[in-house]
Amino acid sequence: MDSACINYKDTGSFSPTVIDYLENRPELRPFYSYRPDMDGFAELLENKKIVADREILYTVLTKQYAKVSPLTTHHSLLTNNISLLRSENTYTVTTGHQLNIFAGPLYFIFKIVTVIKLARQLKEQFPDKDFVPVYWMASEDHDFAEINYTNIGGKKVHWWYEASGATGRINPDTMRQALNQYKGALGIDHHADELAAIVEQAYAGFDKLADATRYLVNALFGEYGLVIIDADDRAFKQQFAPIMERDIIEQNSFKNISATNKELEALGVHIQVNPREINFFYLQDGLRERIVFEDDHYKVLNTDISFSESELKQEVNQFPERFSPNVVMRPLYQECILPNIAYTGGGAEVVYWLELKSNFDFYKVDFPILILRNSGLVIGKETAAKIAKMELEPAQLFNSTDAIKNDWVKKHSEHTLSLADEWRELSGIFEKLKLRAYKIDNTLAPSAEAVKARLKHAIDRLEKKLVKAERINYHLRLEQVEHIKADLFPGGSLQERSENFGLFYVKWGQAFIDELIKHFEPLDFKFTVLTE
Image (tube, one colour):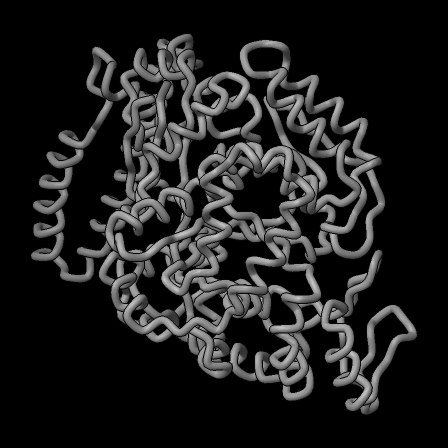
């Protein structure tokens, strides 16, 4: 594949706060630790204090991977990386995501590729240390409606099921219809059978969605050494129990993050998440409900479960696995059980992490370097040929369909469609009229200016009509623009936010992953356009 890079700002698809972070806006500096560059990593590594228990991490991961052992035996790099986590010179670079069926939209894949490439580059820069890419499965998330579908080749594959509780604990045995639909959408060409076999084994071979997702992601990325972690585990929660107990009772995260959010709002930052007084859920099979403090008791919403303070402490101590952090406490949990130095996320994630640093400081846990995941656009041969024929540059593809058409017509028309020169001449005439009117009566100057404004409006309308008339002359050629935009921006949004990876994998197989790893540059912070 050929690649071209575009500044994120030029795509018009990323928030001002993300752009400000990448461009090192001074006002944002108090809300993160180190800059996302090699100098920042050097500083962090110099000062990093690990709070994670490496032996527990190794033991739990070994136990979790035993469930997919037939596959992992072929991935020596993965096996080595899990062992390396016991070493004090090993650090993780992590991304996290929900358990979207069939890996959801492309950016699921892009997140993981980013951490794999970043881990390699960090090893090159700091050869005396080791860096392990990690995918954190959001197995405790309970928002099933966000993960129960995917879009592939213009078709929506939906898992129709009424789920409750943590999604990682759901049995995928009701997925057969969705599984057959997805396999049907893959077709029969190239690597279709290979991917069909992977998803069949994943979703028909395990009784928990977390295990199914681990199998699928491991089949795609195990050979690159990606370690997949499911934090819905008693041993992990036991490490986090002191903070869970303290935060539920003292409500520190609510105070710290609320104060930070006020500061960010004053800078014009759009707040992504707001903390609650208690930022934990009570978790059992089929149940994940908020904990609230009412009438001197800690109550689990929509249940009859409640605790006094002493009973709550006892419950956290005896059954830490029953407590689940919400979106603002999950990052702190992550940094407590991993020797982590970087978190990779999308634009909204980067912004919500900016809300959290004061809480990390309060609990004396190091804040990781925030990395905006790589974004990409994948263009197949047929669409690439249309783009070449239309002589469009990669950056133009992000403009609206109308804007692309107008620019193309102005560039290729045999006629001069711009009235800029004529308007300059008319502006000169109006300046003379304005001066003459002023000399006669100085109150007439605004009237002349108003006439000029009306004429400018009329000239602009005439120019639009000229372009529109010429567009009709070129309508057959301009239809190609609509085909290009529909293919690359399904539903009007970025391809990566909608389209599943499946058809790209069918076409190129594992080489698709290799190409992404080859071309993505995690610390360049550019949008990557890949063309077949």
